[in-house]
Amino acid sequence: MLERIINPQTRLTRSVWRIVPAAAIAWCLLAIPLPARAQAGTDDAHWVGTWATALVERRDPPAGRPPGQAPQPPSSPGAFVPIRVLNPGLHFNDQTLRQIVRTSVGGDQVRVVFSNVFGTEPLAIGAASVALRREGAAVVPASVRKLRFGGQASTHIPAGAVLFSDPVALAVPALTDLAVDLYLPGETASSGSPITTHNRSVQTHYVSPAGDHTGVTDLPVMIRTESWFFLARVEVAARPDTGVVVAIGDSITDGYGATVDAYRRWPDYLARRIQAASLDMAVLNLGIGGNRVLSGNSGVNALARWDRDVLVQTGVTHVIVLEGINDIGARGMRRASAEELIAGHRQLIARAHARGLTIYGATLTPLPSLSTRLPPIPTFKTAMARFAARKRWARWSGQRLYASTVAP
Image (tube, rainbow, N blue to C red):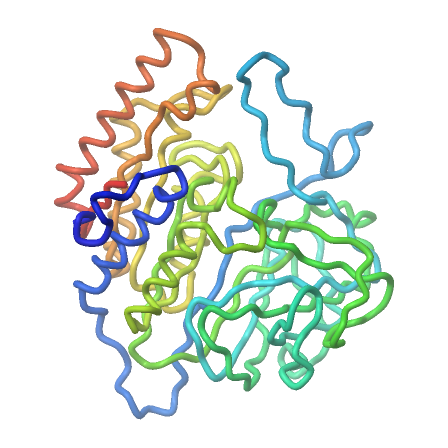
């Protein structure tokens, strides 16, 4: 399959590996028809997610460690050193957040889904808006749309809940940056409620000085951050036959190591290839760095977050699963056997099929890149054996359960 897309003369560097799965999956999506949709010509809007992220809980760090500062990495030679994220530990007090997202499919109406799913107290929303981004923290003035919630400009999100905005008329092209403004009139630190966030967005966002600055053309910027806060999804009213593919995975899907603001995660490549093929299909990136299929590490495991991060996505028709390497090779946690990991994948497949979704499985990427995070032989040999067994299953036995498999 890959030979049809990738030139055999191409040197497969690490950056190219990010493109290969996207190319292969796009080929598969073009070959499989979408499920039946509402008949064209009806008055009902066909809503789909055009952007989404996987949210996690953030609690304040122990006393003595500044917010957002990670524990110091090991100092031994060759030790894994994490990439730092710009200001992930922020709190807000009477401030406006301008958060940037990129659409994967276009539409003529927009609504935004905010989230307080990990909060233990209601979250006050003073105002919100959406607009096409011009550049940096600036938006296109004529595109600004104030958001309302049941007709009200302000509201509260109950603890553990999400909040849909009312739809607004706005022509949104595919592969376009949107700016979602959120004014938080309260003080998040004093509430003691955990923050609902996506820590590593690989995208620059902007926080204002005090006051409601929603919808202003040039946001006054007090601080920048690379995390999304209280923002779950953006949806558009799209063509009736538009489908949605959810990419769920770990840091490979989330975009760990990708250039900030450059849209070089593999789901970004997939979205561009789908648009180039004139296929009506949105792509939602629900990756979480460090995530596992079976047990918690970074965010809840894939089995536990499946309903919230996959099945709840508006208009979802397809799923791509690229996850399991951290179950085998993550340091400091119990490592799953191949049999346990395969059983976990079978559960994901069964739950997708129960909802009528087409699900693809990706074979795991090479494990040696994680060798500095693993103890020496024989533990590394054991991890490699489990990796090989899981990969063989995905390529052969898994083909009878997955609609197709992708081998990067």
